[in-house]
Amino acid sequence: MERVKFYSNNDLSLYFYMDRMKNVMENIQSINHPNFLDILEFYNIKKFLKNGIYPKGFPEGKIKKIQGCLNKKINIFFYSITKEEIFSCLEYFFSTSSKVCEEAPKSLYKKDNIDEFRNTLFRDDFLKCFEDFNLDKKISENDLENAVNSLSIPVWYFLKSDFFSIKYPNLIKNLFLSDIKNFELFLNNFLEDRGNYVLPANISKDELYKFCESYIKESSNLNFLELIAQGNKDIRRLTIDPKLKLNSLRMIF
Image (cartoon, rainbow, N blue to C red; front, top):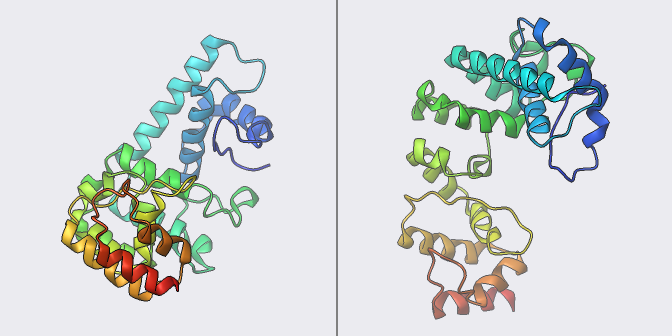
């Protein structure tokens, strides 16, 4: 049995989680000291309930009570979480060390089979909760920078919305501009069926133009070079002039 994880309404795994979800819902009142992974599982169960997806046998009134209980436990946890625990969470989700699960505090990790080798399952949920519960009030820009550098966290994790760019503007800008490959995250927004990344607002047009120039010189990705060479008018915040087009074509041919 695995922890409950909501991906989308159309995901084929939805009903795979029904037995586990039923067990948690039936016992939610008696779970008095949930750890961090319990809380993130509750967060995902809330998504199921919000979309009207849950095991049979739960009347509407019961569902509302369960939702209220989930909300209360999640809110209490994030209200009381400490700066040190947030750092432990970052390390748990982003460290490449094989010992990270062994050394994680009890408040985070059960150390039983359900969580074994699952330290990436709720990674995106953690960052969304960081945003939803304003954990930036507990973690300074310098603090987050130290964690990001220590754990080598890629910038794209922080570009799913504008939250981190607003709360940590200098960090996210510098992190984005530190690797020329990150320009592809920007270009990804203009390709069909690709990710939607929010570029830091404090990157100027001139900085983006120079970043594009550097990318063209170093890139071997023909798809992105062709996108620049075509001068796609939908590419906002960057003026693709004849110089950029010509340089891209030279790299292609």
